Image (cartoon, rainbow, N blue to C red; front, side, top):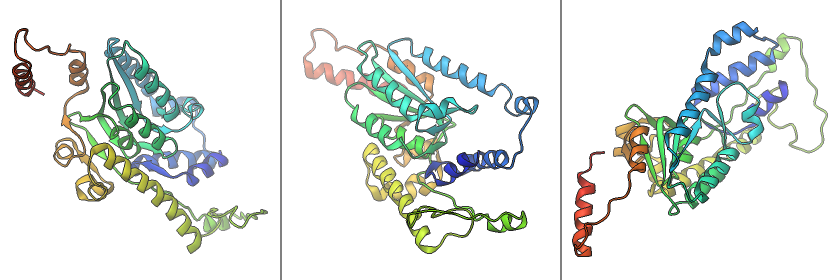
Length: 311
């Protein structure tokens, strides 16, 4: 568990800070040897795991074959084994990429809908997944639906789809990245713990929790965070077709979440609609121009009909 806690603190995150805090609290509790009984765990999580599994199954069935509805739920993690080894809801970016690739090359699938409800997660694997989604534009429609939250790393992914839709009560944003260092030296001194590091390599134990960060170490970690933030901003700018300065600025929240209609008005998303509405739209057969009409006339009438279709 101490290894897991060390990995947690050394990971750059693109996640909602509140969820990060909850994860930290659980890991710290485990690290100090506090373990819940089976009854306590059941009381804490209730039927949440079963509900999450049922939601995934329902999402997969709702596309009715021609539309691939792919869930993006919970905290994002890179490797599949990480997502399979814990009780909370996680999505592996590695597995998600494979699922999207398979749907993209399946001739029976007409379009892909990403059902996104995630606070983000580890930055590892997110950039590659976003690049994959963007590269598939033009092969078949890829629509991401914030249902109801596409935060941080999840927004990074969703912004790369052909279209980003938000359910009426939803929100997107939390653009940013961070790491946390905890100085545990005072606590260790009170507990009578004194750690000694035997190491080789000038920076091998840099950022350890047995003292404050020195300026050089803090600058190094800041550089890591800045690099991921820059990649995040550039990806969103490319995906949404806006400038990098716009993504960094107030219209895109500057690290805050933005509610549905405001997000659409500011260019963070395309429109407001529910997941069911998006799926129904994708299941509709395409309209054909009326027979016997000149091509330009038919195109004009089709455009008029589409403009009049309620969204």
